[in-house]
Length: 473
Image 1 (cartoon, rainbow, N blue to C red):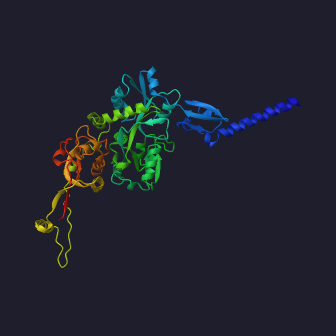
Image 2 (image 1 turned 180 degrees about the horizontal axis):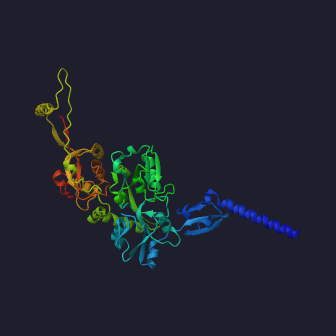
């Protein structure tokens, strides 16, 4: 009897332990997306958590039968003490970021990193390793990491708290791709209402589309999606399975090359100036010193002509410079004429108004004086915004030179680099502050803090003139 009871006891215990393990492991708190955790200083209340996370670089402590996990930052300086190379992870065939041309590795991200690397990591070699785009964050955070930097078109993702991000090295917006037959049909966000849209399979784009097109029809995440038989989403558009594709402009320019006789970019800039995004490099958390150095190197390099030349090389203008002469060829708008009704008189025609205006100007009662008075900051800001929103244009044109971005140009002709948004609004053929093609003609806003005679050369030493205010005596 004693033997039987012992056997029964152990049998019941095993059944109970197995049921408890299965139940705890199937709790929602136990699930770990992608098999790893990128949360810093966090606790996961799950008895079987150590099984799901045994490949994670963590400090594991037992507390009340729960696993307490704390992320341990990986310091690059410690790595450099024993290594002579920094490994950069990128998707292997992803123009314009990184790809192989013949036997040569190249691409926008690759060439940029190669240019700034000696300033950030002197004496350290750069090695690029190719992996799937979606797996790169995991490879950066795992216990025996394969890489120290991730690149290739990543937008800052705060959910990956084990990674810190550089400032954007390339500002961009979304473009709209459709067939040549529908170029004039699907060319704005409003035209996509209720339509079937293809997007890249990432949460950032999906969130943006749902925010900006609330009445969107069907959204198909065409990459790595088993719902569609198409591995090539451009082919899906060419076959009419979707009406249009919303995609990052830098990548869109490259991917429509194979379909240049079928597909077109019908709208190059769907984003508002304050809604633009930017690609960043990611490094392990805890390396703020290196992050600061990388940011400084990026900012310095963006001011060089080499940066602009890289934009032209890897993100070529799909319009082949058609906007270089567009502003010059556009007819100048006639001056606004307001017809004033007078009692008992016929309202003067448009042709009569200049004569009436001349008579008024010659009258002593309407003589004006120009009084020099410096406006307040609030007045200046209000006027700048009003001019920008209205798209006011004083007839002057500016030709983009080598190595110039919108910020650089705004500083040269408007006296303030932060006024790039006004240039962006006034020139709809410009894609983003960083993607500006040499030789393009820009319209110049009316209100400028730089004298007209100095704008052509962009003399940074030119003194800021005091605006004149006209008053009636």
